[in-house]
View 1 (spheres, one colour):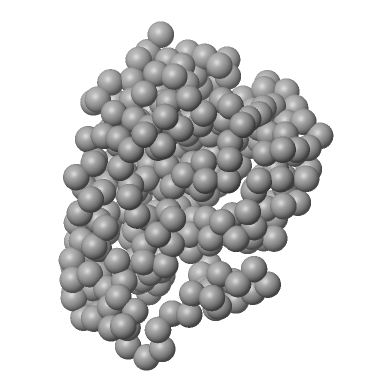
View 2: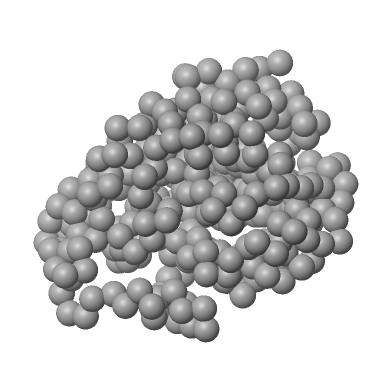
Length: 314
């Protein structure tokens, strides 16, 4: 059985796979540094945004935007705007806080797997291990997911060809579904789709029960049409292997790559190592009082009856 170590938390693409991913991401190794400098210069010129951020994360944004400079600018603007607008997700991001650590130790798991699919995609498995989550724990679970996402912005040093999410719905029941807040879910979906450089290729729901249809109906209004078409429901784990190689999965899902507890523990450790980084990031966010023109209207942005019309980023 392979075990996760500090050096293999996220294996990076190399060789022929690396070359294929460069094509898919529209990344020209001869011009990417120039593009990076363009984004850095742009940040300095925007009074409401931080003057600088680390090069690795900016490069991840460029890759996630297929090196479209304008799309990258919109994503970064929205990313730093969300940091200010949604403190329930972006403040107090300290895994040593008991409410976060105990949640990740005993109730939820969401590790990115170390390996890559044959087409260069990263697989993330999310599951609950306790169905008795309260509304605050649901919010904190989404915060943890974004914390892992922020770590990956820096750790995916070569870039991947997209993300594949496996959502284990085994603990999803009527009582848990009833605690989902439309407001919180909309904010989370808006952040994932508009503020992070995520190329979401597939979402696979495993251990599905009849209630999954209610869950899908709940979240669908907050998803772009192209994402809705990428959701696959599996009542048999065998059909998942048609998309994700069995051998790269943890043993709970028929694979041989460690187990969910060990993978989860490795991510807790790296979140602990990032503690000071998260503290520093508290101040790195948009300042609406300095935004040229009209400041962002958070009520308009998050209105449950609103839409994503003003945020139509392809």
